[in-house]
Image (cartoon, rainbow, N blue to C red; front, top):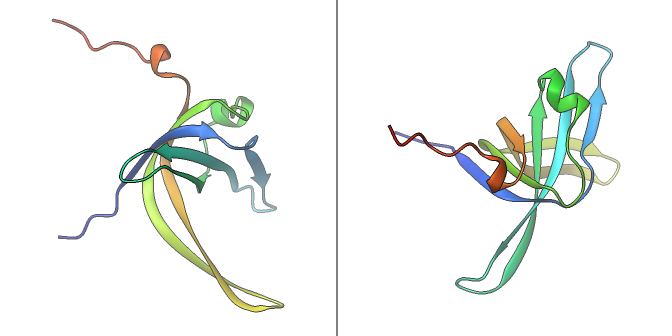
Length: 110
């Protein structure tokens, strides 16, 4: 069995980009910064795309520096440019939450 599942928690590197196409389809593109210390100190900026986001995300997509959680799958996109064939690896999100950990509801003790 194959599995392509990615969960990211980091901060927004920039304000999200919201785009609406003539067809009515829309997306929100995030650049999420993640930092790790082990096995060596490293910072990555990962592009995350959420297609057809709910209205509440479009109305309040978050802003630079805010904590964000994203869950989705890694995908490689290809396109033609004047320089030739190009590609990009990104996360295509199924769900995105922009909020800090202390804003998450605690699990019930029942």
